[in-house]
Length: 246
Image (cartoon, rainbow, N blue to C red):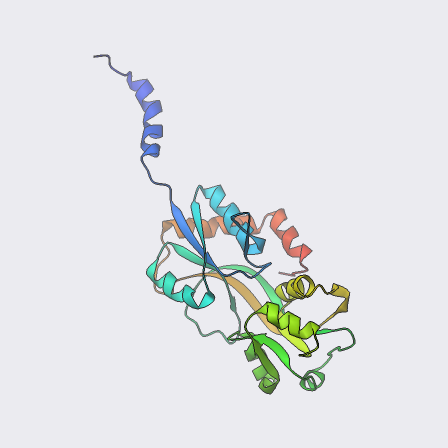
């Protein structure tokens, strides 16, 4: 029987071992919310999606994308330690005890109006009719803080809210600048020049993990890789294109 030279074996062995090791996989749960997070051509996309995808690729980490309703996310994360959810807002009203895994970007919370309806003070804000806010959204808290919760008109989603504003069934819509601008312009087919913005607060969008799970090695590596990706010029250009000042 012929023997394999030790020198040759030392070259082949790492490749043989690698073939037997299962690729690391992180599940990425998300709810469609462009341009924060979305999917295009079967791949994660938009701001957070590009960040996650590129970081995973740089670290040789496989990701499995799973779209779920936001309401299911906390329960899913509690059951699956090697998973993240992209993304949820963190503000002064936040009480959820998530592991705030990674800050994607910070943004302004605005009340948007169209055309001649410009808001320059809380007094003018209080004189508006109804303000569309997605049902269960933290943006309701910003209006409650100003004592105008009676102005809230809850909608099922942002598409419905945009349509109601365009049809003049509500006077305004409350959302963060990047997501609000994109949705109003895209879904409502509205020119950005028609938009007015009145800032009512700030919010940071975070990727989260379960609150009671320590980060395992894969998640720690992904976190570090995302920090590197976020500092790269291409990511800063994405934010700049959406007028986000981080």
